[in-house]
Image 1 (spheres, rainbow, N blue to C red):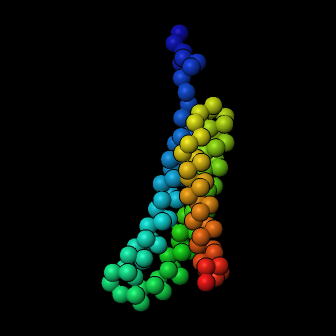
Image 2 (tube, helix red, strand yellow; image 1 turned 60 degrees about the horizontal axis):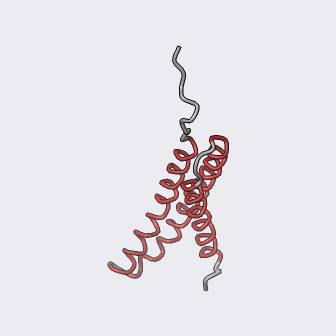
Image 3 (cartoon, one colour; image 1 turned 120 degrees about the horizontal axis):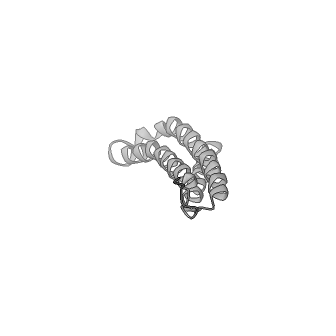
Length: 107
């Protein structure tokens, strides 16, 4: 009769948090590519932000939702909250900045 040790930490919250952080980080890539192309190749590439920003906002929102799931899982497991919080901050920042730019908050 073997059983698992009771002191073994569960890592569901960490897994959800890492997945959410990766998804939110992937959402930053299209905006970064457009900005680099706009500064180096041709300034007329700036119109592509209107295509890249909705992608970034969607990835940030999904990363935020996965981060919330990670926080709930971490709370249930008694694990760490670091990765889910990082994902929430990245996702929230992407949604706020992208929405602000598209609505003209920075002009």
